[in-house]
Image (cartoon, rainbow, N blue to C red; front, side, top):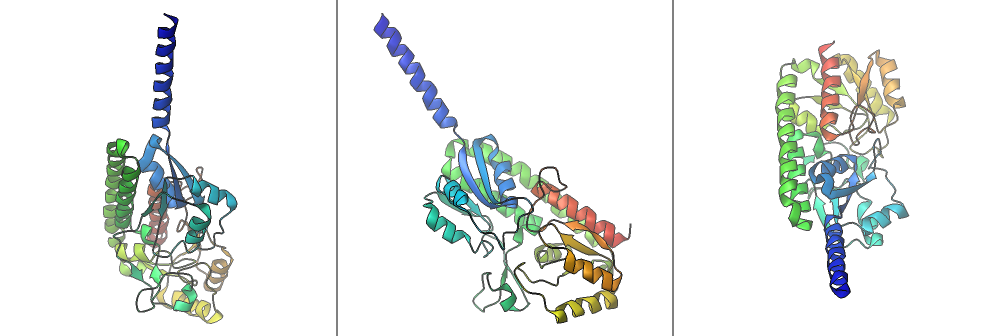
Length: 307
């Protein structure tokens, strides 16, 4: 009788242990905050997400730490942007011993090529002709849909038992991004073209501009590591005056002093803060990818409409 009770207790303990193991969340490492949010939204309770470059962080100049290597080594899934954004990531993968699955979130995106000086984007990927590839593809909500679907596929491959949940979560997020994409096209399309010109810190909004008909002018190149020449600053000041550009926006990841100098020289007001390469902390105006678009749209429309 005692043996029977012991066997039953052992079987129950093993069953509970198996359930606990099955319920352990999938460890995901995301390269920067936009991808961290998307992975968390798609994964829900089934994932534990570590983000390497956190809120207000700059992925262009990030330096990984031993703690980052440890987190990546223990992960089952790595989500990176691709398009040359994370030029430091392969070194981290090598030292971490990461053996999991990698998702390139930008897979399927049509890359935007930069027309500026390639030397100013030395760290970025180049196409076959040597032109720099713009990595900021997430700034187009339609590309964000590709990001979501790629993350859904990646999570489903490492955790097929919860694939239905990942798809359901992804579908909800895709529906929100489709609504945002349509609204951005309508709202900016309703403004006169002459008003749809904005100055920002670095050239992070090329995909946004191409998708929604907004011209962004930036003293820095595609990377915040690029140097800004006096002649480039003078040219932007002249363009602002000649074209009567109404607003200058700082970015959450960059030093605002240069743009404040340009604003002082031109008499154009700083219109607010845009979120380009990183989300805000949880208590800020753009803690999620969806809210990033909402914040940026509201700031830009207010400045362009003169309200």
